[in-house]
Image (cartoon, rainbow, N blue to C red):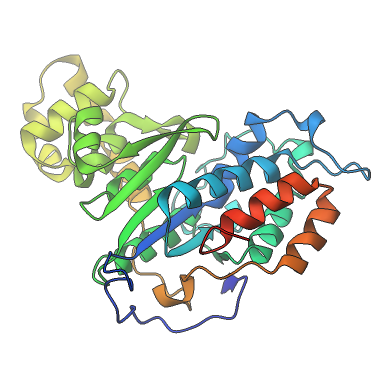
Amino acid sequence: MSTTSQAPGTTSAPAAATTDGGERPRLLLLDGHSLAFRAFYALPAENFSTSSGQHTNAVYGFLSMVANLVGSESPTHIAVAFDVSRSTLHRTAEYPEYKSTRSATPEEFAGQIGLIQEALAALGVRTLSLEGHEADDIIATLATQAGPAGMDTLICTGDRDALQLVTDEVTVLYPVKGVSELARYTPEAVEAKYGVTPAQYPDVAALRGDTSDNLPGVPKVGDKTAAKWITQYGSLSELIAHADEVKGKVGESFREHLPQVQLNRRITELTRDLELGVGIDDLTRAEPERADVNALFDKLEFGPQARDRFYTAFLSEGAP
C-alpha cells in the first residue's frame, strides 16, 4: 500500500493548468534514497551527530539540497519518493540478482531516512512510497500525470533510468558533484550526452548494462556503440530483429548475450501507471509549521541559523 506524510487524496489531475500569475505550475519530484545517500557521502558523518550519537549528515545535506532547489526552481508542487525494501521489488521477482552486489549500508546512515521523512513532513513536503515498487516508478507515474495536467516537471535523482522520462515538459536534474552541482537534462541535453533520444535511452542502457543495479551488458559495448546501433535501427527491438547483420566479434557477443539484454530492457523500463492513492493536487506545497520545525530541529540539534534557513526556504512566499 501507499504510505504518505499526509492523508491520501484524489487521483484526479488538477483542474487549473496555470497559477494565479498565469505561469504553468511546476512539480518538483525527488528520489529520496538516491539523494540521501549522495548527501551522506558528501558530508563527513563525524561532523554531524547529536549528543546521543545519532548521525545527521545525510539529513542536513538532503535538506540543504531540497532547500536550494525550492529556492532556485520555485515549484508549486513537491513530493519526495522513497523505496520500501529491495526484497519486495517487482523487478527482483524476475531477476533475483537485481541490485544484489550493492554494498551494505554504512552504520552511520542508520536512522537518517526516517529523520529525513520527519523533517520533510514538518516542512510541509509530502513523502510517498509503495510496497513492491521503487521511487523511480512513483516519480514516473506522477510525471506522466503532470503532463496532461499542464504542468512542468523537474525530477532530481541520481538514477540515470529517469532519463527515459525527459520530454519538453519534464527535465531531469542529475547530481554530478555531491549535492551541490546538478546537470540539467532536457531532450537536447540527453541527445548531446548519449547520442539518442530520451525514449531510446533505455535501449542503450540495456545494451551497456548497469553495474550499480547488477545488470551486465554486452561485453565491450559502451554508450557509443550502443547509441550507434540504436540510431541505425531505431530501437532495440529492431536491432534484435536484425541481429544477424551486426558484424564482427562484437556482433557475436551481442547475439550471445541477447537474453540478458532483453532482461535488462524489461528491468530498466519504469512503471508509469501505479495506483498511488494521491493525485497531483495533493502535492501542492504546504506551509511548514514553525512549532513542528523547532521541535524536530531540537531533536536533530541543528542550530538556530540552520532551522531558520530551512524554515524560510520552504515558506511559499520565501519570507518568515
